[in-house]
Length: 613
Image 1 (cartoon, rainbow, N blue to C red):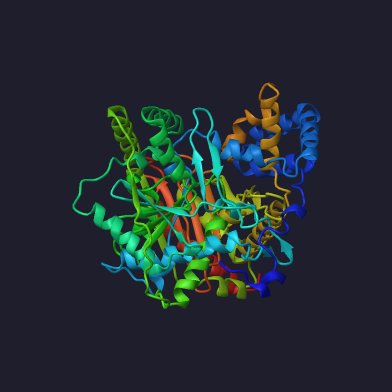
Image 2 (cartoon, rainbow, N blue to C red):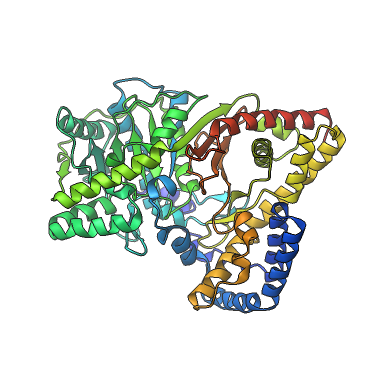
């Protein structure tokens, strides 16, 4: 943790934060016109006419008023959306977070130096934990360079939320507790939590100002493992974090009331910790071409060994593979992806080995934290596990690599790889379900102060027209190619606009929330059946995100019961996809969607090859 004089000239992680531009408010006219375009593919002629009338009435009347109030709010806040989004998208949501809101992912180390191998768990966990602690130190000392898109600086605020952060349940609304501080700001908690067999341990990851080395971390992990081996499982209080939010809030209040000083201190220790290391006893065998077991275990594994509300749970499996599950409220996937990509490169560069000193300092042993519990807590834990496993068993996940081609071949055709995947996904859905699927793709708005995401709706009329052309045997190659070209152009345009803060979904949300805050009746626009049918109000059938062009992949649950979660990463030679669906929904099937997706990719590539677009 020493200072590097040569680096005083380098850009500091958070140095541009105060000069980031404010999040803009789009014009009402533009947002409503985009909204109409977006609902068009889901409407019959008469339905669409009715919606056009509703929108016109809104634009000339109550909408104008609400928009004016939104502009006033934007004058006093650098990000008019920030608090609203946190509340509406995360903190006020009452469904259990762990399966429905958290994002998870498999670690890619098995692709190079850490293939699945029994007996390597703790050795590898000590090394990956050490690299993670180095990343925390980079952020704490502001040596992590600010991210940029071209020359544009991106907002880095979410990186403060990766460590020392936890969501705390409330009866009506949760809160986020963030204990992180940079070195300039003051002391920051430096203890870790390790959960093993339902038992919770803690130790300080820093000793005399130095981060513990892998051999020192290994000794701590061995100690925890030995404490738990051959012993009965612990109470598994962590499982309560997988409960419906209000139930968890009440269970937590009860837990504190039994022994306020003792139980309150344990909760505070977990909340303020750097992150959680979960020592998992399962062996979810996976390969570079098939990550299904690892991804399934990360999303639906044992709730008694993760603290679902922590911003980062590092999952360490018995076969030496890794994963993660993270609370989505404090930050978006890109933050974790950045760290995991950093870890992957470091582990690859060092071949997964530690080449430093083997000396182990006399560091205090991990301390077990045992809650004082009563019969009600035990019964709450049983209830939490029961509802969790009921949902977890209903989750279908496939996570496969498409290896015929990847980014290199797509770019050679002068096509945007992300748009290519999005259109293939829609074609796959329409082949299976014989109708357009309302679709959400994440657009990043980090060009703006505290910007997070905007919705980009890929199911455009142009995309639907192209899908119809592809499924119509009488349609010739030229017509299909022309339709594909128009679909690409439209998608690229909408994505670029969304990233500039010119989407319409967040704007409409803002107008809806102003009406709600002022006690006004919900405007008709939001009650119109086409609003939900086209995906509005969190009703998207396809919830999708490009996780990036790295080795790091994520997975999420579908947004709606008859929907899919569709996350993907694009490499030069392959596209790796994780798809989730609910087994209890008869009409969806993640494996079929993947197969249709692969054949759609081939069809598109063939279409792009027969002649230049």
